[in-house]
Length: 302
Image 1 (tube, one colour):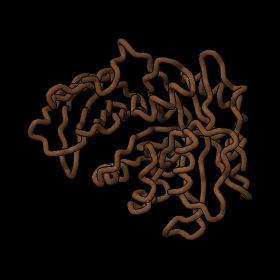
Image 2 (cartoon, rainbow, N blue to C red):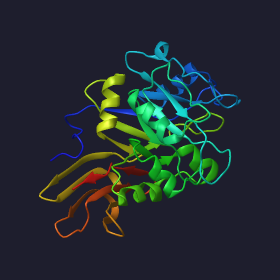
Image 3 (cartoon, rainbow, N blue to C red):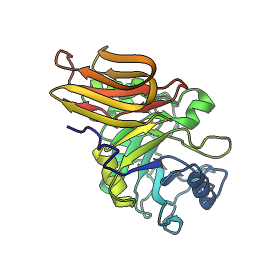
Image 4 (tube, rainbow, N blue to C red):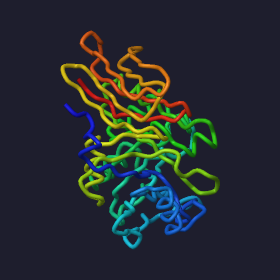
């Protein structure tokens, strides 16, 4: 069974799910952001502008990006949603990324809290993820309260280079331990105030490069996340897992608790893992190459 559609028979599109223009707190105008991602070889990007009121870093309106679409490059209307109600730090806002929002989606009211805001975005058709959980030390109980989101950022490039808090591994695995069927994303969170573009992305398996197809594949988990490593094949037969990748040094499978298996070496491109005596109800794959670049599969439930 293919856990990811094989690359030799499926189109994959490279995209950024989290980024900003000067519609909120980015340095470049929207068309300039698009041009930068086109130069980096992307197929789509998302201008997930901060959606909140009364702050210089945010805007109260979802940016209409329809005029930025081209035949070979699309921009998906998005926002980084904010609301009050963080548990431990008074007046700090939640950060939730929603891709595929209608442009008339309203920012949260003073009384709306994150679980309700996420549900409203899901009902509006968006692919919703918990942004940079470790950047603002999102607690585990806070994450549980928003675990009905589709996914969580396993890597945020801007948070990595600005604060050394770019990973979301511990938070993601905690949710998985709690049997929350969460997906994983790697993103830039680009603002173009420094070289923060092209550091984390998703590779989405889709028949077509359009908003509907991309969002559908994201919601189904038909993609992998990367900072530079390619997953070429990912399949399972009788609990035997086969992974084929671009050259790497470590291919690791992790499951519940401290369960893990790994294949290590120089320029390895394949790993086979036998799960018949591996006590877990889920697993995910992480691949690391000699340059310290990563790829992550989405979790697989057994």
